[in-house]
Length: 127
Image (cartoon, rainbow, N blue to C red; front, side, top):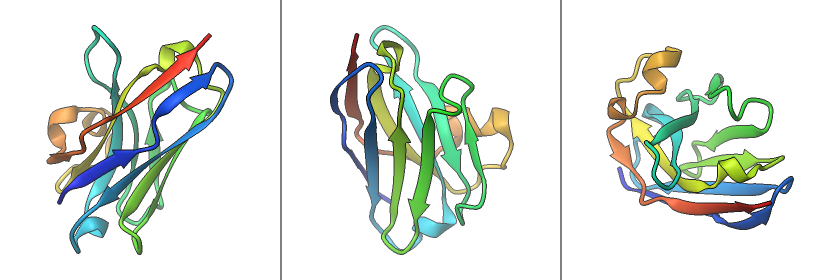
């Protein structure tokens, strides 16, 4: 599967932004989808994940209550609605797809569990 992330940009602190990730292929609904981010000089970190049917989601503590992940299996897309953005949310955001991930927090948050990655989209939050 090929993933294409979009929607990044410059936003003021407290603002909102929606990221989208379009996937190719007919097997999108068989993948657990995740969002990760990497800030300058830092390791890539987990943001959110959503189960194959969209019935369950999981978030990093740092974004819980501010970010919402959703998916549309009919359109092969996964989105990340980000609200109450903070300067520390500044990062390149990546969408990822995993075929055989066990639905468990520590596993979902591990980047090597995911098989496919998008190219990333930059989000900059100004103070």
